[in-house]
Structure formats: C-alpha cells, structure tokens
Length: 228
Ligand SMILES: *[C@@H]1O[C@H](CO)[C@@H](O)[C@H](O)[C@H]1NC(C)=O
Ligand SMILES: *[C@@H]1O[C@H](CO)[C@@H](O)[C@H](O)[C@H]1NC(C)=O
Ligand SMILES: *[C@@H]1O[C@H](CO)[C@@H](O)[C@H](O)[C@H]1NC(C)=O
Image 1 (cartoon, protein in one colour):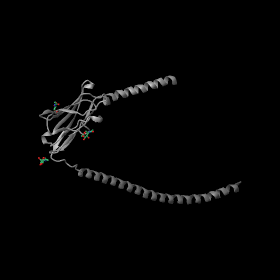
Image 2 (cartoon, helix red, strand yellow):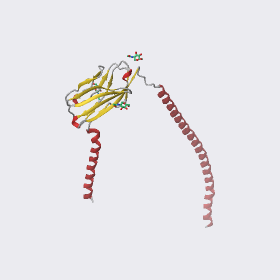
Image 3 (tube, protein in one colour):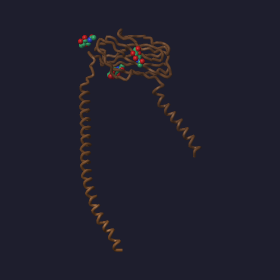
Image 4 (cartoon, helix red, strand yellow):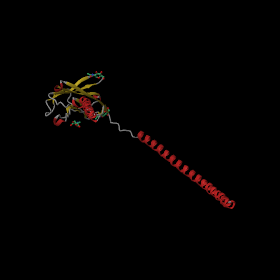
C-alpha cells in the first residue's frame, strides 16, 4: 500500500508542476506589453505628460520593433516608430510624427521602457494611445497596450465633502448603535440586579420557610424515637 502510494504522490507532484508551468508559460515567458494600472490618464492643457509603456519577454529580443499609435474618433496615426537592436542597446527612433513627442524610456539594464512624453498638450490630443511591440525572436509575436489620455483645463481636486459626509453619517450611526447597545446592556444589568434582589428576597423568605419547616421536621424526627 505504502509502496504504491509513493509513486502516486510523486506523479501527482510532477503533474502539479507541469500544470503550474502551463499556467505560467503564457503569462510570464512570452512577450508582454503594459501601460501600467491606470486605463485613463489626465493632463492639463499646456503641460507635458508621460505615456508609460514597458514590455517583457523571457526569450530576449533582437531588432525588436516598437511604435506608438494615436486613435481618436476621426484620426489614426503613428506617432513614433523605432527599433531596439538588443538588450544592451537603447532604442533608436526611426520616425516621429510630432516634435512634441520624445522617447523617454530606456531598454538598457532590462528596463524595457519605451514610454514617451507628449509636451505642450492640447485639447485635441485627447484619445487612445497604443504602444506596440513586435519581437522577431518570437516569430514576430506582436502585442500592444492602450491608455486613454484625457486633456483637461485643470485637474479636479478630489472632492472629499461627499466622503466626509458619508463617513460622518456612518460614524454617527455606529456611535448611535454603540450607545443603544450600551444602554441595552445597562438596562439589562439594572433589570438583572432588581430581579436578583427580588430573588434574594424570595430565597431569603423561602429559606425562612425552610427553617420554619425544618423546625417541625426536627420535631418530627424527634417524634419517631418516641414511637420506637
Ligand atoms: C488651458 O485651457 C484653458 C481654457 O481654454 C485656458 O484658460 C488656459 O490658459 C489653458 N492653459 C494653458 C497652460 O494653455
Ligand atoms: C480606432 O478606434 C476605433 C473606435 O474604438 C476602432 O473601431 C478602430 O478599429 C481603431 N483603429 C485602429 C486602427 O485600431
Ligand atoms: C519609464 O521611464 C520613464 C522616464 O524615464 C519613467 O518616468 C518611468 O517611471 C519608467 N517606468 C518604469 C515602469 O520603470
């Protein structure tokens, strides 16, 4: 039984590792492109904004092509196009659509950062920005990630009043509940005390009864010997 159990366990372990590998393979080994967690970024007109983009690939890369595109309701254009020779070199820009765009990232030291900066942002810059990467080392595997840029005339400060109101209401309700609970505790405590007092009275009175009953009882005990 134990002999048969061991190979079974080992097989299960290997199967587990295999399954884990299958899960990890598509997520961490092949080419990936990311623009970060935010799906929308806000920029004030006239200022500069960084459009983030990083990529990763466990297979490494060679002559990796990257480009950024802009897509709004009426236009689609390539903003910047470039190539990265290998992991030790910085990206080379081949084509740039707009002087306001600069490549900010670096691909040295495994940074794999191809973020761009858009300076002097205009309201018409609002739209979808996609970062594309194509890796010849992975059979020209291509991936992209998109971020939405919203140009505003001023960044709205997060309005805390509503949060404050909600918090104070919630706090008030909780406080009230605690007060009610305390009051209930107090009332039950008082009720218990008064009941206990009443019981004490009953106990003491019944105790008196017992002693009174006991007295005749003792008298009754005294009686049998007289009978015998
Ligand atoms: C941004 O736009 C607003 C409204 O059009 C304007 O008043 C403001 O001067 C602009 N800011 C810059 C830095 O261009
Ligand atoms: C641009 O965006 C529109 C609307 O989301 C979409 O239908 C279209 O396919 C996009 N164009 C490109 C080239 O991705
Ligand atoms: C990419 O490079 C830009 C510009 O140097 C920097 O601000 C940004 O934090 C970098 N992103 C990451 C994920 O390292």
